[in-house]
Length: 118
Image 1: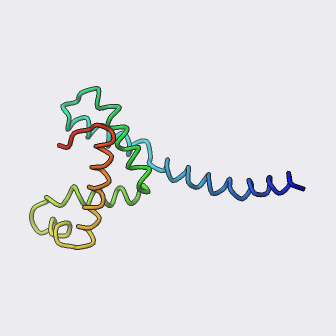
Image 2: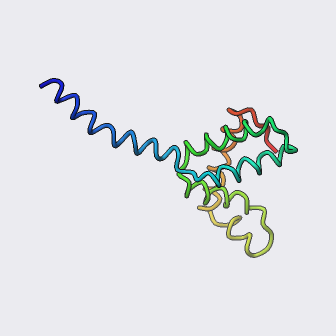
Image 3: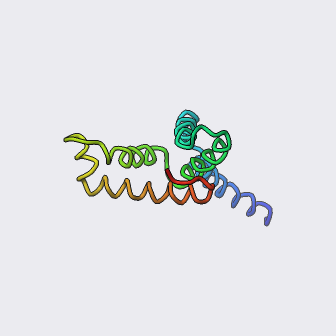
């Protein structure tokens, strides 16, 4: 009877573990590659940043679902956009909040992966 109880517990835990694992890897390869290439470009294209920038995007992927990453990174990137269109990213409190949360996540990942801010 004990063996049956242990097996049924595992059957309940496995879907939860699979869901957590799927969240950690829900970034498409193209999204990861784009991030790494842009990060490497910011650091003069040095090959050593291939690994460091990969580390950063892996950490970001563990912290955020892909859709949130896209929304938050766009919010941060477009805060410096001039004119009326940029106002959407500069003025809306919710967008500012998304940008600042993403910046904090990225800054922490950069520190953990030894990538200097630029």
